[in-house]
Length: 254
Picture 1 (tube, helix red, strand yellow):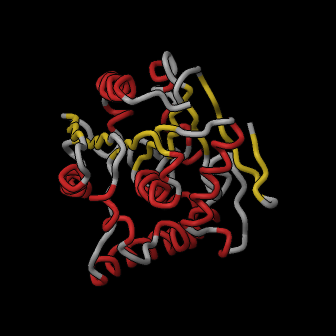
Picture 2 (cartoon, rainbow, N blue to C red):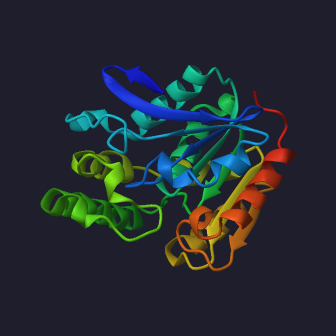
Protein backbone atom coordinates (compact mmCIF):
# COMPACT_ATOMS: atom_id res chain seq x y z
CA UNK A 1 0.00 0.00 0.00
CA UNK A 2 1.10 3.56 -0.64
CA UNK A 3 0.31 7.12 0.35
CA UNK A 4 1.41 10.39 -1.20
CA UNK A 5 3.12 12.92 1.06
CA UNK A 6 3.43 16.13 -0.99
CA UNK A 7 4.85 14.24 -3.94
CA UNK A 8 6.79 11.66 -1.93
CA UNK A 9 5.33 8.16 -2.02
CA UNK A 10 5.57 6.15 1.19
CA UNK A 11 5.11 2.38 1.20
CA UNK A 12 3.40 0.62 4.09
CA UNK A 13 1.88 -2.79 4.89
CA UNK A 14 -0.94 -3.84 7.20
CA UNK A 15 -1.59 -7.29 8.65
CA UNK A 16 -4.04 -8.69 11.17
CA UNK A 17 -6.79 -6.97 13.11
CA UNK A 18 -7.31 -5.61 16.58
CA UNK A 19 -5.48 -2.89 18.51
CA UNK A 20 -2.95 -1.12 16.29
CA UNK A 21 0.82 -1.47 16.43
CA UNK A 22 3.00 0.80 14.31
CA UNK A 23 6.52 -0.61 13.81
CA UNK A 24 9.19 1.79 12.59
CA UNK A 25 12.51 0.38 11.39
CA UNK A 26 15.98 1.74 12.02
CA UNK A 27 18.41 3.67 9.84
CA UNK A 28 19.51 1.67 6.74
CA UNK A 29 16.83 -1.00 7.30
CA UNK A 30 13.21 -1.01 6.13
CA UNK A 31 9.91 -2.54 7.15
CA UNK A 32 11.28 -5.88 5.93
CA UNK A 33 13.18 -6.26 9.21
CA UNK A 34 9.92 -7.23 10.95
CA UNK A 35 8.76 -9.70 8.28
CA UNK A 36 9.36 -12.78 10.43
CA UNK A 37 7.54 -11.28 13.43
CA UNK A 38 4.34 -10.17 11.74
CA UNK A 39 2.50 -13.50 11.76
CA UNK A 40 2.78 -13.88 15.53
CA UNK A 41 2.07 -10.23 16.32
CA UNK A 42 -0.89 -10.02 13.92
CA UNK A 43 -2.81 -12.79 15.69
CA UNK A 44 -4.37 -10.20 17.99
CA UNK A 45 -3.20 -6.85 16.60
CA UNK A 46 -3.32 -4.73 13.49
CA UNK A 47 0.39 -4.59 12.62
CA UNK A 48 1.54 -1.66 10.48
CA UNK A 49 5.04 -1.59 9.00
CA UNK A 50 6.39 1.04 6.66
CA UNK A 51 9.52 2.26 4.88
CA UNK A 52 10.88 5.65 5.86
CA UNK A 53 11.51 8.06 3.00
CA UNK A 54 14.95 7.35 1.56
CA UNK A 55 14.65 3.67 2.53
CA UNK A 56 13.27 0.52 0.98
CA UNK A 57 10.27 0.84 -1.31
CA UNK A 58 9.41 4.44 -0.40
CA UNK A 59 10.59 7.39 -2.51
CA UNK A 60 14.03 8.94 -2.16
CA UNK A 61 13.54 12.72 -2.44
CA UNK A 62 16.62 14.57 -3.70
CA UNK A 63 15.99 17.74 -1.68
CA UNK A 64 17.86 17.62 1.67
CA UNK A 65 15.09 19.68 3.28
CA UNK A 66 12.72 16.73 2.77
CA UNK A 67 14.57 14.84 5.52
CA UNK A 68 13.97 16.08 9.05
CA UNK A 69 12.68 14.52 12.27
CA UNK A 70 9.58 16.68 11.99
CA UNK A 71 8.82 15.34 8.52
CA UNK A 72 9.46 11.77 9.69
CA UNK A 73 6.95 12.26 12.51
CA UNK A 74 4.44 13.70 10.04
CA UNK A 75 5.01 10.64 7.83
CA UNK A 76 4.23 8.34 10.77
CA UNK A 77 1.07 10.31 11.48
CA UNK A 78 0.04 10.12 7.81
CA UNK A 79 0.47 6.33 7.80
CA UNK A 80 -1.75 6.00 10.88
CA UNK A 81 -4.34 8.25 9.28
CA UNK A 82 -4.24 6.24 6.05
CA UNK A 83 -4.98 3.06 8.00
CA UNK A 84 -7.72 4.82 9.96
CA UNK A 85 -6.05 4.44 13.35
CA UNK A 86 -6.66 7.05 16.02
CA UNK A 87 -4.34 5.62 18.71
CA UNK A 88 -1.66 2.98 18.41
CA UNK A 89 1.17 1.33 20.22
CA UNK A 90 4.13 3.21 18.74
CA UNK A 91 7.13 0.92 18.43
CA UNK A 92 10.50 1.43 16.83
CA UNK A 93 13.95 -0.03 16.41
CA UNK A 94 17.11 2.07 16.74
CA UNK A 95 16.42 5.34 14.84
CA UNK A 96 12.79 4.22 14.68
CA UNK A 97 12.74 4.03 18.47
CA UNK A 98 14.14 7.54 18.79
CA UNK A 99 11.50 8.74 16.33
CA UNK A 100 8.83 6.93 18.36
CA UNK A 101 9.89 8.93 21.42
CA UNK A 102 9.82 12.09 19.31
CA UNK A 103 6.35 11.15 18.05
CA UNK A 104 5.16 10.84 21.64
CA UNK A 105 6.42 14.37 22.38
CA UNK A 106 4.60 15.78 19.36
CA UNK A 107 1.40 13.68 19.37
CA UNK A 108 0.83 12.08 22.79
CA UNK A 109 -2.89 11.84 22.09
CA UNK A 110 -2.15 9.27 19.35
CA UNK A 111 0.02 7.04 21.56
CA UNK A 112 -1.49 4.13 23.51
CA UNK A 113 1.92 2.75 24.53
CA UNK A 114 5.58 2.80 23.52
CA UNK A 115 7.95 -0.02 22.57
CA UNK A 116 11.62 0.98 22.33
CA UNK A 117 13.86 -1.61 20.68
CA UNK A 118 17.67 -1.29 20.86
CA UNK A 119 17.54 2.47 20.82
CA UNK A 120 18.50 5.45 22.93
CA UNK A 121 17.04 8.78 24.06
CA UNK A 122 19.69 11.03 22.55
CA UNK A 123 22.03 13.27 24.49
CA UNK A 124 21.62 16.11 26.93
CA UNK A 125 25.16 17.46 26.61
CA UNK A 126 26.17 19.26 23.43
CA UNK A 127 29.57 17.56 23.35
CA UNK A 128 28.07 14.07 23.36
CA UNK A 129 25.53 15.11 20.73
CA UNK A 130 28.33 16.44 18.55
CA UNK A 131 30.07 13.06 18.77
CA UNK A 132 26.91 11.32 17.60
CA UNK A 133 26.52 13.79 14.76
CA UNK A 134 30.12 13.17 13.69
CA UNK A 135 29.19 9.50 13.41
CA UNK A 136 26.10 10.37 11.35
CA UNK A 137 28.28 12.41 9.00
CA UNK A 138 30.67 9.49 8.66
CA UNK A 139 27.74 7.34 7.59
CA UNK A 140 26.70 9.96 5.03
CA UNK A 141 30.18 10.24 3.57
CA UNK A 142 30.53 6.47 3.44
CA UNK A 143 27.33 6.12 1.43
CA UNK A 144 28.32 9.01 -0.82
CA UNK A 145 31.65 7.41 -1.67
CA UNK A 146 30.86 3.69 -1.59
CA UNK A 147 27.13 3.48 -2.20
CA UNK A 148 25.33 0.49 -0.71
CA UNK A 149 28.69 -1.24 -0.21
CA UNK A 150 28.95 0.95 2.91
CA UNK A 151 26.09 -0.88 4.62
CA UNK A 152 26.99 -2.55 7.89
CA UNK A 153 26.58 -6.19 8.77
CA UNK A 154 23.82 -5.97 11.38
CA UNK A 155 21.10 -8.57 10.86
CA UNK A 156 18.37 -6.09 9.92
CA UNK A 157 20.43 -4.55 7.11
CA UNK A 158 19.82 -6.01 3.64
CA UNK A 159 21.24 -4.17 0.64
CA UNK A 160 18.70 -5.30 -1.93
CA UNK A 161 15.77 -3.61 -0.18
CA UNK A 162 17.18 -0.23 -1.27
CA UNK A 163 17.28 1.11 -4.82
CA UNK A 164 20.44 3.10 -4.10
CA UNK A 165 22.18 4.92 -1.25
CA UNK A 166 21.03 8.46 -2.01
CA UNK A 167 18.27 8.45 0.59
CA UNK A 168 20.59 7.03 3.23
CA UNK A 169 23.01 9.92 2.70
CA UNK A 170 20.30 12.52 3.22
CA UNK A 171 18.65 10.61 6.08
CA UNK A 172 21.93 10.50 7.98
CA UNK A 173 22.37 14.26 7.81
CA UNK A 174 18.74 15.23 8.20
CA UNK A 175 17.11 12.64 10.47
CA UNK A 176 19.81 10.60 12.20
CA UNK A 177 21.72 13.71 13.33
CA UNK A 178 20.38 15.25 16.56
CA UNK A 179 19.85 18.89 17.41
CA UNK A 180 18.61 19.14 20.99
CA UNK A 181 17.78 17.36 24.25
CA UNK A 182 13.99 17.39 23.85
CA UNK A 183 13.63 13.61 23.71
CA UNK A 184 15.85 12.74 26.67
CA UNK A 185 14.22 15.48 28.72
CA UNK A 186 10.77 14.06 27.94
CA UNK A 187 11.39 10.64 29.53
CA UNK A 188 10.14 11.40 33.06
CA UNK A 189 6.90 12.83 31.62
CA UNK A 190 5.95 9.77 29.57
CA UNK A 191 2.64 8.55 30.94
CA UNK A 192 1.81 5.54 28.75
CA UNK A 193 2.87 1.91 29.24
CA UNK A 194 6.39 1.50 27.92
CA UNK A 195 8.40 -1.59 27.03
CA UNK A 196 12.16 -1.33 26.47
CA UNK A 197 13.75 -4.28 24.67
CA UNK A 198 17.48 -4.69 24.01
CA UNK A 199 19.85 -7.50 23.10
CA UNK A 200 22.44 -8.25 25.74
CA UNK A 201 25.18 -8.16 23.08
CA UNK A 202 24.21 -4.71 21.78
CA UNK A 203 26.85 -2.81 23.76
CA UNK A 204 26.23 0.64 22.20
CA UNK A 205 22.56 0.62 23.27
CA UNK A 206 22.51 -1.51 26.41
CA UNK A 207 23.24 1.32 28.85
CA UNK A 208 20.89 3.68 27.03
CA UNK A 209 18.10 1.13 27.28
CA UNK A 210 18.67 0.72 31.00
CA UNK A 211 18.68 4.50 31.38
CA UNK A 212 15.36 4.87 29.57
CA UNK A 213 13.75 2.12 31.61
CA UNK A 214 14.88 3.86 34.80
CA UNK A 215 13.68 7.31 33.76
CA UNK A 216 10.31 6.44 32.20
CA UNK A 217 7.73 5.90 34.96
CA UNK A 218 6.68 2.27 35.18
CA UNK A 219 8.71 1.18 32.16
CA UNK A 220 9.46 -2.52 31.72
CA UNK A 221 12.96 -3.56 30.61
CA UNK A 222 13.56 -6.85 28.78
CA UNK A 223 17.14 -7.86 27.95
CA UNK A 224 17.22 -10.71 25.42
CA UNK A 225 20.19 -13.04 25.87
CA UNK A 226 22.24 -13.97 22.84
CA UNK A 227 20.94 -11.09 20.75
CA UNK A 228 22.69 -8.09 19.25
CA UNK A 229 21.18 -4.97 17.68
CA UNK A 230 18.18 -6.78 16.16
CA UNK A 231 16.74 -9.13 18.81
CA UNK A 232 13.54 -9.57 16.79
CA UNK A 233 15.68 -11.32 14.15
CA UNK A 234 18.21 -13.08 16.37
CA UNK A 235 15.64 -14.39 18.87
CA UNK A 236 12.26 -14.04 17.13
CA UNK A 237 10.27 -16.42 19.32
CA UNK A 238 11.36 -14.73 22.55
CA UNK A 239 10.91 -11.26 21.07
CA UNK A 240 7.41 -12.11 19.82
CA UNK A 241 6.43 -13.58 23.18
CA UNK A 242 7.64 -10.54 25.13
CA UNK A 243 6.01 -8.06 22.79
CA UNK A 244 2.75 -10.02 22.52
CA UNK A 245 2.44 -10.23 26.31
CA UNK A 246 3.02 -6.49 26.56
CA UNK A 247 0.49 -5.72 23.83
CA UNK A 248 -2.12 -7.84 25.61
CA UNK A 249 -1.64 -5.72 28.74
CA UNK A 250 -2.17 -2.37 26.99
CA UNK A 251 -5.65 -0.82 27.13
CA UNK A 252 -7.33 -1.15 23.73
CA UNK A 253 -5.96 1.20 21.08
CA UNK A 254 -8.19 1.51 18.05
